[in-house]
Amino acid sequence: MLAMNFRGPFRVRADRNRPYPEIKHPQDAIVRVTRSCICGSDLHLYHGLVPDTRVGMTFGHEFTGVVEELGSAVTNLKVGDHVMVPFNIACGACPFCQQQLFGNCHESNPQATAVAGIYGYSHTAGGYDGGQAEYVRVPYANVGPTIIPQGMDLDDAVLLTDVVPTGYQAAEMGGIQKGDTVVVFGAGPVGIMAAKCAWLFGAGRVIVIDHIDYRLEFVRNYAQCEAYNFKELGDVVVFLKKTTGWFGADVCIDAVGCDAAGDAFQSLVGRKLPLTGGSATALHWAINSVKKGGIVSIVGVYGPLDTLVPIGNVVNKGITIRANQASVKRLLPTLIDHVMSGRLNPKAIISHRLPLEEVAEGYHIFSAKRDNCIKPVLIPPHARA
Amino acid sequence: MENRNKPEPDKAIEADNDRNIANSPKDHIPGWGIDANPENDPTYPMKNWNGADYQRFNYDKPTQQPIDVEVLHSIERPGVSRVFGTSTPPTGISGAIRRWAFKYSESTYLHWVPLVLADRVNVIEGYIDDLKHGIVPNPFAERGWQAEWKYNRKSLVKNVAIGVAIAGAAVLIMKQQNKKKKRYVM
Image (cartoon, rainbow over all chains, first blue to last red; front, side, top):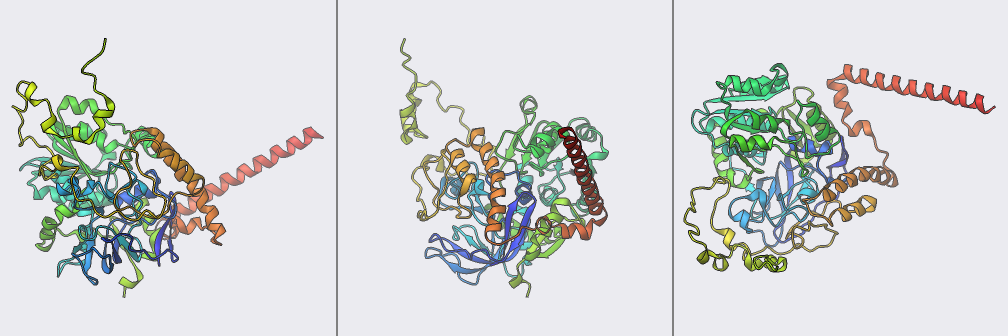
């Protein structure tokens, strides 16, 4: 079958000779992919920043598809169902899943205890092949896959598997109260969704910080917020203090993670060498820009190594830090309602629809930010008919 | 002098000691639990507290996926999780490095740094494997430079020209140095 094949940092190809996935467990399903996104966090893999990313792996953790085969213990789905598949692989039975921490499942990732299994996200996240393929194995099919509601656009559905829940949970973890000033670092797809969702929690003011002008322009229009280029601000923290009456924002959201630009030292030790868990520039700014007693919400992805953050300021300012991988399954009922009622319009962030065969171009366009790319979606050959 | 309060590590590892209120010293500690406040939960709403922490050894574990490929597992857990990915099991030199890395916990650099090294070695193994299977890697296609040609042609041409110029200059310098060496030898 046709699938993306990782060959090393900045090198991927569309490979027509990948093996068709097999049922390996009674709760498995095989899904024929209809849409698959390239996620901003896929770029961390693509850039070689996530340890144990092996050559030959297929990435892709945001996808929809049609159920083709079912294991003997799958009771919640039938062949032919069109489903959206949350990026977290969750058993539904362990204490963490029972508490709806589906991103922290204890029975889906042998390689690392810090995170649940994630489709196509290195062996640090369980070693599963992902959805940038024609077919994919979906474990624990009774738990994750959710039938796409009638009338929902497929492009909306595929974005409900990661980027929308992640942006929404970023705002939710911010504990936003009515009238709060919320600063979102990063105008990538997750930052855009976080800014949009901050209003749903009653934010009084939403500010987005990035350095890519076309993305700032997009988020200004899409999320009706203020947006600033940090390269034009001088000291970002001083700017944010000034614009919040010298107090700092009520809530700061890190929607960037380990690939952050803006600080030469962080970039050197976190991205170029890399000696730390990533360039923590956005998180550094978030901690220093939030008010005393404020909340910092982190959804940006970092590697497992130590990361340079001003932890002393966290203590001295009495900051609450909240962070997690999005618990997609928990959030889906709320988000489906928001989409179906028109409060959220996720598909508007899709800037590129590419055939799966052009996966290498897709990664390059997204990584190098060519052609005003916001969010690329890959479409397998059988879904283009 | 013997410290009677010193815990014995082996006993501390017993599962029964964890979250077992019945065995906790609550009767001997004045005020035990007097300020406990269920509302003081910064994890809400991400975590739907249901008391499962107290039942966490007794959940119905899913069936074990047959382990028919080599699966490395963190030493911070007793074994392989009930399901796992079967993509790209460890092989070759990179596989040997990964096996070594998994002797150490996720808490140590001895785990993560060798894994990063293994990833880089794996890239070279990938080139060899491609050639073995009659595939000539095409770095231009794999890097998606067709898109660069389409959307950023001017800059691509400039960068390639600079690269060619630097490589050309390096070759010229090396040639001149070789000529000088030959003169001295004669």
